Image 1 (cartoon, helix red, strand yellow):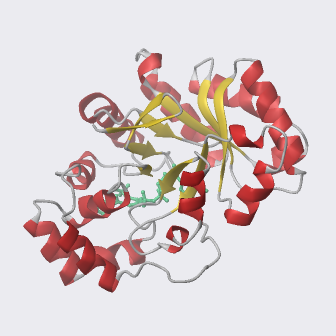
Image 2 (image 1 turned 120 degrees about the horizontal axis):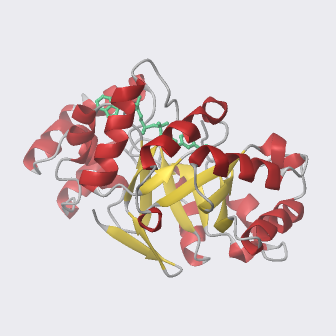
Length: 281
Ligand SMILES: NC(=O)c1ccc[n+]([C@@H]2O[C@H](COP(=O)([O-])OP(=O)(O)OC[C@H]3O[C@@H](n4cnc5c(N)ncnc54)[C@H](OP(=O)(O)O)[C@@H]3O)[C@@H](O)[C@H]2O)c1
């Protein structure tokens, strides 16, 4: 595993997502997670109270039971509906119970709800003071929302903005990613493998992507991940329920993508030249 350093934390560049965990073959899912953590150093683990209404947290909790907690960096997210009614403590404590741990490393507001941002910041800061979470952040916040957040008292303590970002969804490169970098907010990319079957296979079947991947000893999937982490400042969380896919996805993933190949990718998967609203799932 390779790491980035952010506000005195060492964070794996690539972590495990848990969206839709709890499918038909839970043993395979748990084995994949365990393999990722123990053999590939994927100790960055992303979950949310929304995923399976706590099922993902529960499965993740079972997988990490008995592991050295200090070696894990657990990201969890509160549902905006719960945040709106001020139920931060209740949600967080439920997540902690399901995960079987007594703190969350990074707790995110899953997306913006109706409550004033200052109220969210105040509640999140309370959780930090209570020792239930170590850091807080947001998810799916576009640039104007980050600006609003930073206008709140304590808003600058936002550790991270988790956003949709991948080779075919590069809108955030125009101003959101630079804004976050400038304000010392970690960008964590979700759906780095393009999430949907259609979007992923359109990239992985692209002859250009296949040719570049083959030249670099990667697979199309690992090239997608390498692309997202190419500057070593964005962390990526992806999901797979199969050890086989996991090996394919991680193949030679940390070998840098040469400038020439990045230029070829840029020609086809264009970097935006104007502001477009942040895409969300
Ligand atoms: N903050 C947010 O709002 C938000 C939104 C969405 C996601 N997330 C987080 O980000 C994580 C990752 O995003 P994601 O799950 O949406 O998308 P993703 O990681 O880009 O793609 C996951 C999909 O790719 C498939 N896949 C992986 N490797 C493959 C391979 N080698 N060949 C074929 N298919 C492959 C997986 O299926 P298999 O399981 O069959 O391998 C799964 O269906 C989530 O799990 C979640 O933790 C956050």
